[in-house]
Length: 91
Ligand code: SF4
Image 1: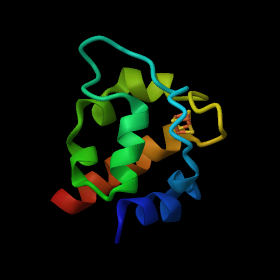
Image 2 (image 1 turned 120 degrees about the vertical axis):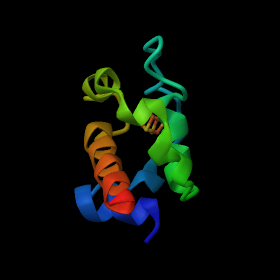
Image 3 (image 1 turned 180 degrees about the vertical axis):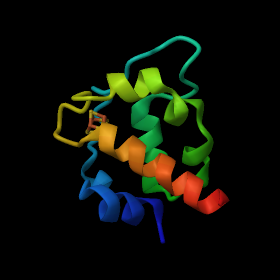
C-alpha cells in the first residue's frame, strides 16, 4: 500500500491536497534533515526515504507540527501515522 494511502487510512488526511506552498517550513537546528513540505512530497511519491528522515523522528518537530499547515492538513497526525508505518514495516 502506498504511503499516501496508509496516511489516509490511519488519519483521514489526504496529503495529495498539499499545495507545496511551503508555509509549513520551519527549521529546528540539528533535528531536521528535510523540511516538512519535502517530507510530504516524499509521501506523495511513495518514497520510503520519508520513513528514515531525522525530521520524521524528531519529537521537537512533532510538537511544532501542530497547526503548521496553513491549508488544513493535520501534519501532527501524518507524522504519527508515518512513524507507525515505519515500525510496522520493520517489525
Ligand atoms: S503548509 Fe500544508 S499545503 Fe503548504 S506545503 Fe505544508 S503541508 Fe503542504
